[in-house]
Length: 593
Image (cartoon, rainbow, N blue to C red; front, side, top):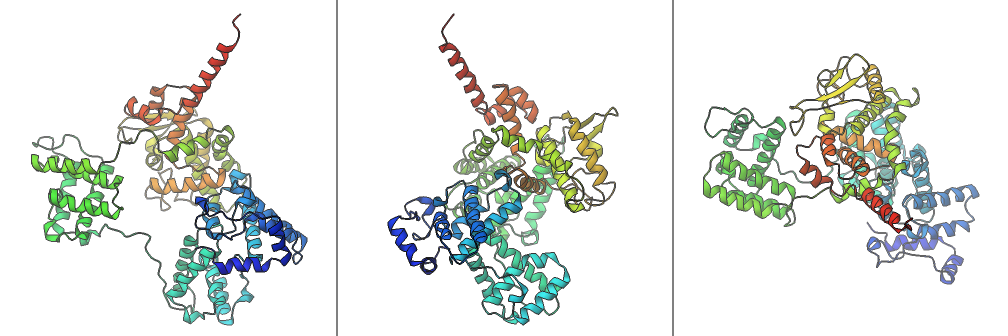
């Protein structure tokens, strides 16, 4: 949502007349709409430098408050890596940029950064750009105050943290508790978008709606109106019960056959597919059957997996996926077409069918990726700075070294669990699925002399290559300390998984652990780092010191062939190679003795 002309007029109306004269004599920098990044910012929006100048001459505020506001504007500008005259005072422009700032990267604590953002927002509120926040219980009407007192009395933090802004908004716009409708909830989102500068408006709105619906069941006399939030995306995979029964039965039988092939049967695969592959194939085929139903194919035509591979029917489904993706190819479409092509051979559907499916797969195939993605290269480039890399390397031991009592026991144990995962990834860059599924009895071998080995067998790794490594002594110490203190805070005593679900009945999923680590690293170090990037980091560190030594890099990462390692990481050692070449040139320039 753009700053409206009315809001802009409000800004200028709040400034003294002398200010406008000052602007004409010494023009302040405003938004240049010709710049792409400012294309959707209202042209008259003032920059932070404008607000700083006006605060310097503001007589209605105490000196300390003015100082804090100016400091907040400058700190936020610095956090965005811009000068104050390059930062527009527009909430919609600021929010997606501020939310990406990691305080640790600025050398600030989360609280210090939060205070800086709050002071900057207060400056914007002073000039009427955003609304002032009213969060005190005395600001509420008697009806809302009664309900809110019940929320506070319940000591339900889910409600007390997520609901207050929504409740105060409803109170300010004059909506009584029993009058709340979905329209009011939707207008609340619009208000957040116009006034939020540091957090995701959509996330705050969704949290508030979820909390409201919880209050309906938890708080006495709370309005019994259930509010809805729209789906973020349309789901095209139907429930199993909604897919044709014949197709489901045939799919189940086919996957069982591929998981446990009969070695004596003609035409059967000689090697079983791995459980992860079976799960992926099953999910893809169910989704493609759903796509066909969504595209209008009658259910009675989808009687088997082979029915999905009929060329004309396959084209209908692939074309529907293509059109919904804006008439562009993507990885999902390409993988689905390739799976149908491969299944045609396994199902012995005939040469003509296989040929047509191969042609379809070729039309929607994606170019083979060479090396890493640009995003991963950009993130790795940051880690080539020794000081930045150091923050990541010492993060696990810093978390383990924190004295007890500064954090609630559960959150301290959770932080140690995340830190242990990071420490293992740094020295043993496995795929996150393998890290998440470490079984204490199967994968950890204590040699009895202080040495601890992490061992992955053929069945554990993607390339079916066994990998083992002795954990460094500091990591082994962290692991033993964590296992001695984690129960019952994180799992029941005797849990055999190193990174368990909270009921201890199985390991955490790789995706869940990856999401936790990404957040932990960003908050703790300011570095944008996903779990898979640890593998790229290991290759970068090795190749930077040993240009061209791909065979060792292959062994570190557990790749099956050196060609894959070279294709993925060729060029990572360019910096060190160029440094060596530069040193050689400098040597050649020196006069010969």
